[in-house]
Length: 298
Image 1 (tube, rainbow, N blue to C red):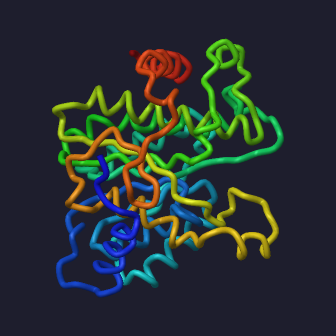
Image 2: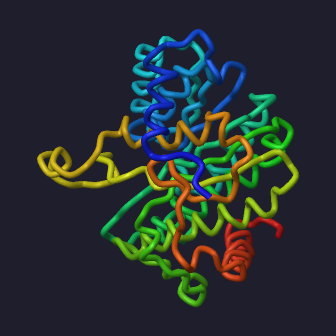
């Protein structure tokens, strides 16, 4: 079922933000955005701030985080912008982040799992996981689970997972995952983004009746720091971060899709994801393995 044409997502954003309507639809809402120091995460935070939300930026680098916060405050005119620091490649830091959020905020209405990584080189985190898989899947899996009770308490609330069209080329190989070979380069990136879609669908099934919805999206081919490509190439073939943020903002705030859950969106429109992403057995098995890897109960 299609909830909105792609044109509507863009029109919705500009109608509410650029027109500066007196009704700020996110007033009283608290939104947490990971990877918010630049690119899509930063523009998503700015857009939600302009809609009246208190936004909480999660950044790894303190200087870049402060700079992003100052810029969002200046451009949005909002005084409700907070900054939390965490390196999401570390499970310990993910846990510490969740603890600080629960301690500091009585409510959390929107969680945007935006932080992502693409690396041509194979590397491992402090926990021994391949970095791409750890940042793109294990970190949002753990953070979301640790914040679920707060999200349920704040219902109606929403979880928005930023995936990628590259998930169509991904595959979940459980033998390789258990052996610590989730992959690097485009293959590893595609696998991690497929894992995020599978996580979205399985979580949606587990959250039925709680008032918490969860959807994932492809933001478009966006010129952000994740892609180390020449500037002239991004100008020719890639959209701006502001354009890429339209769908996350739409999923985080649009009243029209308040009840939509377990969907994959591309340019503001619910679309069919890869065939493997709809395999419930794969999704459940991946959930259990992910829980085991990050040290959560099933």
